[in-house]
Image (tube, rainbow, N blue to C red):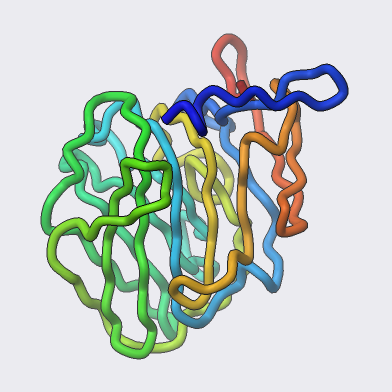
Length: 229
């Protein structure tokens, strides 16, 4: 994993970040505004390279990436660990109805282990597939059996795209270190939004993605707050 956890890149003499540290404190998360590129109605492919302090997700959900609020009408999609089980979970609003699927088995990663997590949703069939990766996202292995939700067009909600929580930075926050996250459409299609910690300087407040969007590192409180390290 040294390729992604021990970056030797520098910019103007300053070290680039290796990961986004999220402390599970309200107001600490990363976000990029709603945009046509992340307002996806077709098939969806969400991927993240992350280390989670508690892969069992005891006490709360662990949100990886979401374009979602805690209430309608702007729910679109979210990928997260289920509360207390550590099962991969995904929900998506389709034609105004929220549909959800949970993996049949948990990934069983050790505490703080860095691993790839992925979910795909085929809007034509409703099929949901979960995956894990132990080589930085180069190879994906299906986790458990296929799951399914109703087939249909995804809702184009206008919530921000967030890492570590849903929009607003109040709910479903657990300690995690995110190296990168991306949204693709269709499945295995082009990347339409991507957070990559190595594109930002350590302790920076923003990152400009290779896909063009601006990510903000939202911070609140004192002590261990959200930072690029």
